[in-house]
Image 1: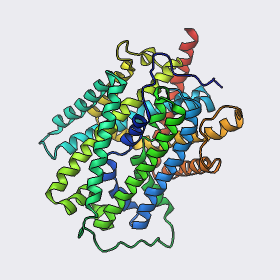
Image 2: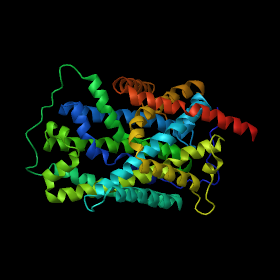
Image 3: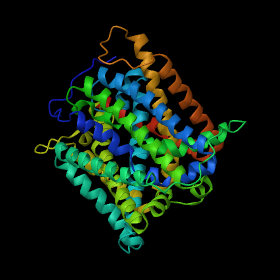
Image 4: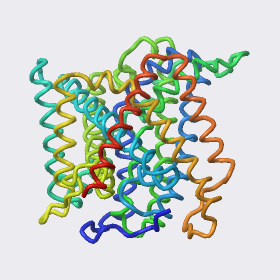
Length: 441
């Protein structure tokens, strides 16, 4: 196993706890909480089950965050779970993890968010199809430029939009608890037979809303006092997100019947219209726009770090490990990521890739958390500044649920699931090409 090492000298540890927490919360809390409830209500037409799936997925991600916190504190290197999987399962497994997230998971998420921004902006401006794509590309370009010009600038943008989005979400949720806004009490009884398959289908949508929680680990090499700040940012950030999502769903169920939630594409808009009238649409649309900006900026801050680590290992283009001489940022990596995301926006292929991303991501999340157990047994003497709570029960529970989720998704959606692992496997010949190239250097 490689010795844990400090970040390279040209990567400054410039991020503190508030920066790190803003990355966690800012990436995860996006437009999904206003759009996804329809899919959940369609799969689980029961208020109790709806709350159960949101809380279950939140707790599951929290357990995963504890595992990432232990590994991030023990291996405070830039690269996140690429580094963790590499250390636990070897360079090929690490490469396939980085390859999948770079090619599909990050880029598809950013492209979907950028297009969603343009669609939401139509509430204020009459944008056609061409103009909408221009807006989406401009958003990616502007945020990429800000992060290109400095990590501190990107972090400042992240903190600003995280605060603004949380304020907007609080207004929308709070409006449901104003006097006279509630509907007759929902029936909170559980069904006699638990719908495991439907619960798994609902989890796909809910986990999409929670996705992005591991991203701060990609920047471990740039976080000050990572042994303290990474566990705190992950733990407190996920706890805050669980509270926000739970309150949001209680607000929906307080104002809207489940049958109506299942039929509307924008449950958040229906809630805001019901509780705030015409002003509700304005407040919600602004909140969604702020949420999307914060999420995309967080991805731009974190995602290039995976290719950076791969390039430092000689398994990707050397330019992806280049540091700008003035701004001290991963300039080429940020540009390359922006270009690839723009291609997905222009072609519309992000819609297809997004359906494959979740199962591939959770396969590697489960593999990464398994690494906590492997490293504890293999290297018991290694310093672990943070040890995850509940070990070994919590990592075993996370891995078991992750495996069930992947298997259930493969059963219920065999086509996209198979393609997802074809994408993962496509990295195998690429890995050997790069390894052969590295051996010749």
